Length: 200
Image 1 (cartoon, helix red, strand yellow):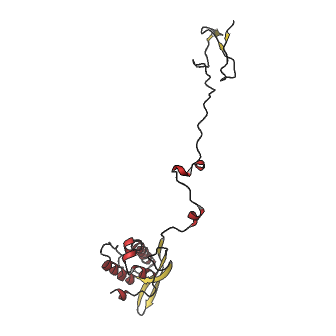
Image 2: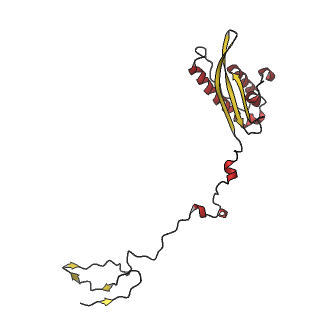
Image 3: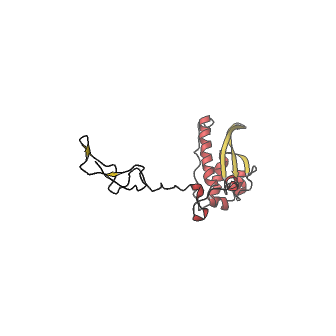
């Protein structure tokens, strides 16, 4: 039995023979592994697409660029960190009170120094809030944690009050209108000799 040898297209390493469709071997009908176009399904001239690496992108094409070392290690433009910590209960004559350390770290020009640490008691916070309300009519000043009349020197009550005072200060100190318009804000946060009577 003879067949016509088809010229190779270069796609398949095997020689393909065109056989009559009725030809079969061992009783099984013959089938072809090739499509009607004569190309092998296992060989292709198309190259897989090349994914462009992010490192090869042209910065002039509008793609976001990475940070330089100077940008990565330079301080942020505006930082403000407020902590109320180290509560300390003291005796004053027959009375007792608890005061708290206020730690402030910032590079905002409205504040006088970059780092400060002062101590204030709860009554100082009350006076400070009253002054803020008088001088800042356009800003809604948040409430302080409520007064406690029993068990106020227990660890649980002192810690709850410390957390409330810290939240209060973080809100008012971070307000841009208070930073630029309040006369009492920076002094309360940073001046060890702050006196409420100076703002009566």
